[in-house]
Image (cartoon, rainbow, N blue to C red; front, side, top):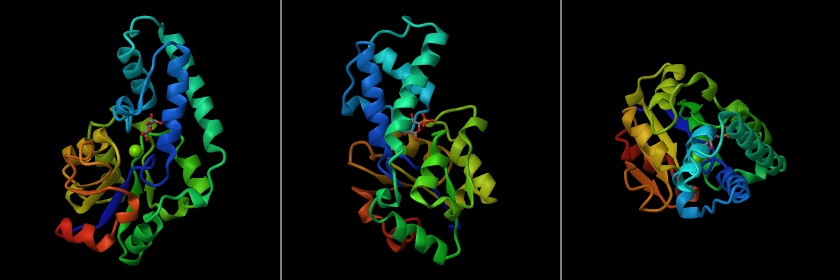
Length: 219
Ligand code: BG6
Ligand code: MG
């Protein structure tokens, strides 16, 4: 029986995935690497340093920087990202999300945040929805990035639930893999290709419907 939901943040609750993309693109251009939206699908859900490594590898520059230089590049990207997210307001909650969260609460189910982003608590504050979450997994406590299941397993554990009692909601390929490996029912938001492994898929958050998801998950 389903007793809780675990949500990704960037690209599911708000469109901050777009800001991550813009900040990485700017940083990549600075070091002569061109990235596009197709490549960006491989960055979604992946933590900061691993995202940088993937970009460097894509540009055949994985051996061009010292660890210290890489750390500085990551800081530069994050500073840029922080500038972009300052202006987030509750109006930036994606369509359908508030309705879904309200239904989860009405049904007395638990709710947790399983985002790889160290900026997630700041964004939840900006959106005005921090209090809706029973738990927020701190990515600093994790040793492995999505697609490893660690983050979703930790989320279930913090909620006091078995993985099989949780539904995970994601927009990233790595995120869906993480949910599935954790043994949870996965809800994917996105196109058929990137969400091909999701147990249940919607094209956009506006189509997220509590009753349909619960029926698909077999309750
Ligand atoms: C994930 C995003 O939620 O968080 C990734 O999908 C991002 O794009 C990752 O790299 C880490 O975020 P941050 O804010 O800690 O750099
Ligand atoms: Mg995401």
